[in-house]
Length: 193
Image: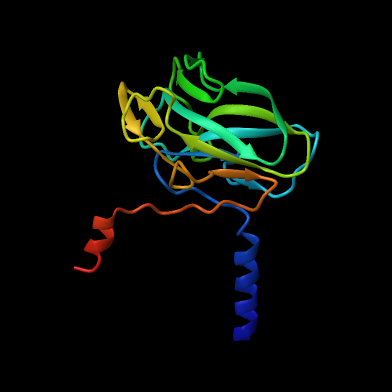
């Protein structure tokens, strides 16, 4: 009987492994669903447009603006068919292709634990895949090399789903990305004192 329960538990854990939840506060991510659960999609459907969402998960306060860059790299040729800013009266003042410096007339609503900031429609034109990276704005308002949000007139540095701006936050047509934990040497050293 004990073996049966272990098998059932293993199957339940394996079935939930596809959904990944970002538990970090003020964390930027890219998702392929509106419930903000899937930062990866293993299959590349060539010539079939698909939606991609830039989301701020678990905001620590109100948000009515953000700044970051979102870049895509990989082996699959692709086109961005449309880019739609979410938010009431959203205005992007960053003229660069991958940069965002957006302000809104009202705070973004929280849905499924996150704020949907941008929606893209993307289409791949060949086999392979894409990695998505989120980094600081092209002309950042705060130092530190991270994306930034604003709410109630206060700027806040944010993190990314991967925990590092040099590691992809999402993948399409490749295996899933795994978040990393960032820790300073001092914090690791303090564990052994």
